[in-house]
Length: 447
Image (tube, rainbow, N blue to C red; front, side, top):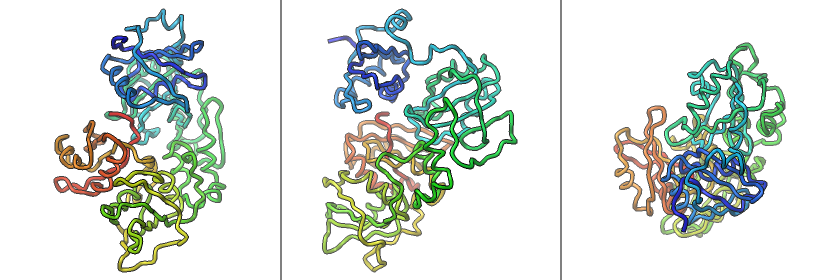
């Protein structure tokens, strides 16, 4: 057996798999310092920053089959202990990071738990020199930005200082390369682009625009056109919703559904109640009312605020495991739930997640995962207190406490998705030391 190494050997790397695809596969476990693509052999070599990171990668993918773009890849320790310049020159190249220095940087942000705006990027990059222009967009590699400095020296210093670092503690990792563009063209000063040398630019986009070399921005801009209001009638703020989803709706979500009420079946009647259903379905939108069907105790009706939110809930929760049962979800033939003594009302609840800054909450919409994100925690909370609060719902594999904008938050990884889902439905809106905690699913694979 090959002894542990900082260098990881990946096999069955098809030509459709990019360097960024491989980076996203291993970067949850640590910083990648070197990457060599062996295209002729359908293989790749990645060097992690330290040995413990590479060991974590191998341990995780021993139990989970890694798959990239629908292709299974196979991971093992390399016989190389380090990747040298000779290795890179003879066998491949390290992504685009060997491109010539330029005053324009291409920045990819991995593990984006929190929204990144032009203002955030300017705050991060401006200490290294005058930032002239910033453009953000979504591409297959994830959320990206082009940042143009006044001088090449400033760009080189920023890349050297910031490569591999996180904007926030434990997330929003920067992957920085030199762009091959010579000049950025910015037409609008808004939350997606900014020309700091020309503050008089307009803020609104009046129709679809595109910019050569900036990736596939069309899906985001198309949703901002006036025609999007017709194509997506349930999406009250189409542009903001699209931005929260990274530029376009999730595959399989149309945005055209107008039915607000969902029929949920195959529930566990011994363990479910209206508040637990509220905790789960409120991840995907605001809840108007919920009714458990007394003549069919494993059935319930859930009325969402609009058809788009109902479509998200059906899309992401169909087949999810909860209390030992696999949920079935379908749109109800009833347009709404009639108020009645046995119907629980939630329309005015302060616990609805989409009351304020609603669009940003869509970025948390995903199928249940084994990782949950806790917010609104007491400032002095400890990991032991979090464990005590949640451990009845399953085996907790790892926890991480961190702070964002002075607010205490945490990530908790359970052994599987069902345990994490149970913790969310039972403990969202529960109280720790007089603080009402909020819980959502996290899309991170590891802490």
